Length: 373
Image 1 (cartoon, rainbow, N blue to C red):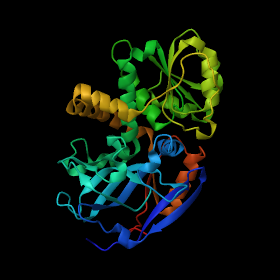
Image 2: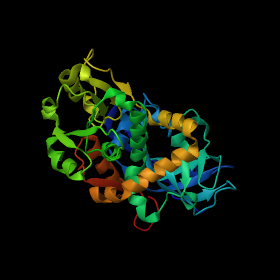
Image 3: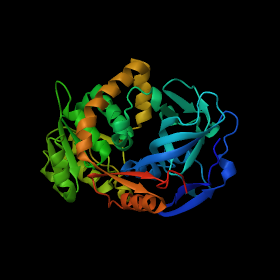
Image 4: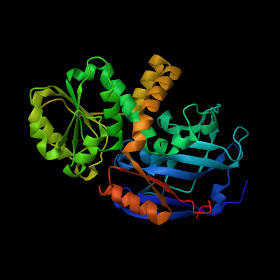
């Protein structure tokens, strides 16, 4: 393999996400052993969804994918990486892949179930985790990959997949009797994806209502995929007589409580998805209406894959994704960031809720010459 510089990892304190550090990795830790491949992480997106991974790091085992020293965690991100060292006959240097990475310069994987379009990381510590997070797509054999769409793929694809499965889940359950769907954190990329899919619903379509901060009202209304957009302090303007399915991307306890008290028994389903308002997640107990239910996208993916067949599910997803790509490009301005300072700045802005909804951050730890620090 080509000689590598030392690698580096971005880590956060699990019990205080505001504490961060950079940890260098010695060159010898980057040497792939028999059956392993070294991936140099090229570019990755950072969104509010990645903060959710950190908030639920213990509860949903996100910290387990890329272990760190006790008390510290490595936040997963979705990105592209290139094979720069291989001791695996099935993957050669120079190949490009897309998948789940740490905020680091490199990742060593053990490819298994290698096919023309993908492989699974067979590292022992990842085997108890949901398969969707262990799969890496080989772009040369991925029928949905187009180089010119790498930016929206980084920013939206994993979030869109969550939204697709949510749309499928809600439709399958007839929206639990809801006549409207209310989405909190309506400016988040997962909520935008879901609103787009819901707005295209055939037949008995539900009204799609977005809840957002006042500063984001103009942006969310301009998307064109919500029937109505309401500020958080205007929840009481919603009709209390219309049954509502609530999809909670914000995880804000005060917002959830206000909606439950206003709609009462007409809040027929409460689906917990994200935690963009992660510092206000504590909820009041004994609320009227449906009790909150956590949605875990990989479980729905496994269920539907078994029912429909993996090929049919992939085709449905790909068809919806292609329809989403063109409008999505116009909704978000890509902001590139390079180096440790940029990564830390974007992390803090997103963690503290200061990121702009019309910006999508793509980051790299490679310097301008293409090498890693």
